[in-house]
Length: 497
Length: 100
Image (cartoon, each protein chain N blue to C red):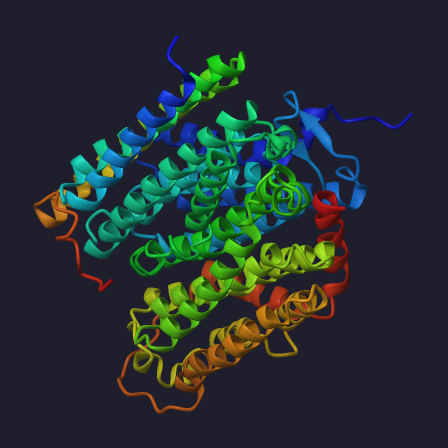
């Protein structure tokens, strides 16, 4: 007989991150003045790699094919939650490895890594949430450490300002989410997502329910940095330490989408809420508007920036708009395809965007400067890192032969297949625009003459390793897109089929 | 017994007071208090409808909300402390080294 793991072992990615955070606290309390940052970074890296490995193992072994329901159905582990756990764990591993060099002079090393691990544990819990209570708690578990991470450079005014703005908007949107959940509960009498789905048939309270659904959507818009709660994103990404920006703009955003996918397909399904409700609550229309506005605003704002980090921040808002297509095209009868494409895009985006922000981290490590002009002629000094950055830029723009091409192509194809050709058209126009500002970086690095003299003293091993790993993943994701696509499809099937 | 709709009105009023405070006040600490009002508006709903529906789910969730709100304030006060150290003020409009 094959040995069977207990059901709670399905939560292994989350448990591993919690364990890493606790181990880091223990190391720190035994020796608070430790200078051994290698030990701390290695612990966090080992934990994240183990979490990524476990997620892949579970996916390959088919653990989530029959959903595992835990704690009276408030948590559900299926292909979708494991797929996203892999995304978060691999982004966390990249960020932690890069932080080894970037945070070298920081005095609170153990706290930094522990906060990253705690935020990651909240993120891995979010796609598994099957109750609005767990949605709220896990979202806060990933948000609260993130506020502290953004403001962790306590003497840097930019970092503190970014942390303040992130916190203020985060606190506002979490209370909006809580109020929305309370309204949904008022109508449905339950917090479990499948039972909330039945609330649409309640007569007479559709108005209350509709406001609740919209407020829940607002709470997720904050987490995904979508309009109308995107204001924090450029500030937080610009002011935060660059590895933290990478973490927030890739993993945290994907977590917001993961939980939004599950809540809006399981708790507010299109059939009962939009099409046959007593009075239709058309959240799909709201998401369509948000997707178009988010794409357009993010890309136009990115095109006007002077600093590279802020440009990437706005491009991250634009990518939130692309990923929203997964929800916006849900009424077209092509649900599984388009939702899976959105998930696959978030996975590819996790690698290419993390890599791009880690290149910024490398530039900050060398004190290169922030504007496009400061990057002039960088390729003559660090050709390898600049080649990797070029890969990230073209992949973010959606050019072949990189992973970003495949996922974006399938996403737009899915929107067209669902009958929303105009969503795909807006997306394609925005992608064309994005090529302009992404290639500005490439042009500065490779074509422009160096404007100022500066010497690169050292080549940090951790940052280089993380950037190389992200670049290799971005390139390999085009030939290796088939398995990603397959698992994204079965993850989407867990929600809508 | 008070009809349950009245609780919705009370909580909506408390929520709007919170929103008003956030939109008009510039002191970061008042901002925190306003957020607390908004979270407690949610708690009023949860507790009232928990009784209306005859299950304890809402009351339990309101306890979780309280705990999360406390944790949120702890982080918030920490950030406001470093804000004061760097900008010598708790006015949220003072921190503008980056443009909006």
